[in-house]
Length: 79
Image 1 (cartoon, helix red, strand yellow):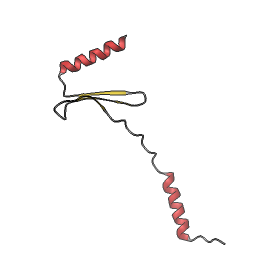
Image 2 (cartoon, one colour):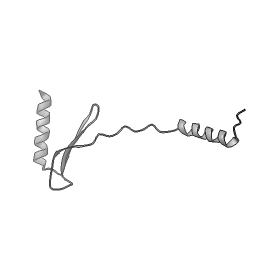
Image 3 (cartoon, one colour):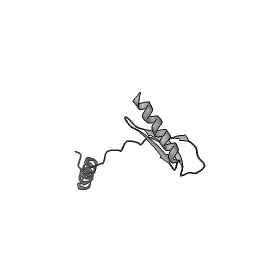
Image 4 (cartoon, helix red, strand yellow):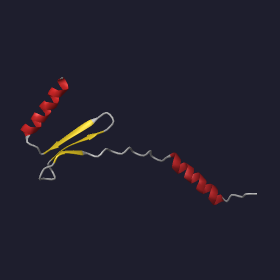
């Protein structure tokens, strides 16, 4: 006959309890793709793409350049 100790029962119950409340794993975030290289590490143009969303990040770029990029995107989407 197979006897189970009190400690084994307690350990089994605690493991079951812990696994019932485990947080699901977060999906991995996609890595950003660099669009251009600049001299400063704080100046960048990059994008990330997930299932249905594309995020474009423009940091410390000239306002006129950013406006041109946004206008180009807008024109392209209107086609």
